[in-house]
Length: 254
Image (cartoon, rainbow, N blue to C red; front, side, top):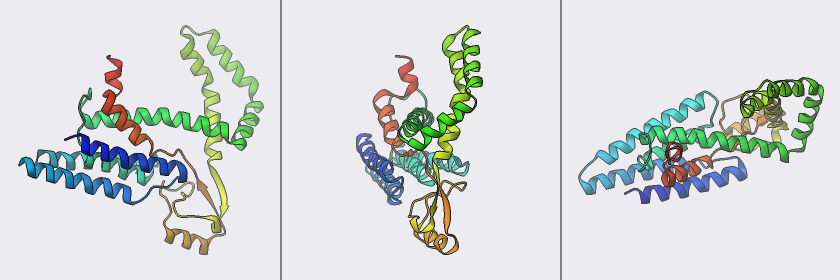
């Protein structure tokens, strides 16, 4: 019962994640495929077994996941593609075994944990590979290096638990690094260079449609676009994590 929806969902989200990493775009067909296949499979499975509990569970979990995703989208934390893919996962995989908490809560909790760890590594690697970001960070650090180092050393010297205070002492450095990364992910381009899927800085995290691009080219010469953490790959990673390991809570109690 679980293997077919799980493997199908994993294959579709893995494809979408790799495509997102390459292009920063999401096929509109991906959420539609997840939702339609989930509803079809749930209905047929329930019909064959003469028990519509599975189908209703698919609808309920799908709507729950979609509502949570759209809430993050409206809060400008996620893109619209992320929200709809999460909803699609709920429709297609409304249940997984061996989760410590109730499946929907467990999946969303582990999604946020996996996503948080992934995002940290993403921005670290992004900053290391981006020459402009490295230069700006070094310049910012040099401006107030005495303050940063003094604060860090003070935290270490007064520390009872060294790792915690070292982290506290590093917060100013983490903050300026995050601000430099935020600026580094924005760039001003000619509207002639705009393409479908680009995201305008300061707007909802929503890729431009072809008609939006044409309209902007008529109205403006330059626009500022926003890059961001390419997040779709987190969905298949979380599916694997929850399916094979039961999620974070299970690992903690092993």
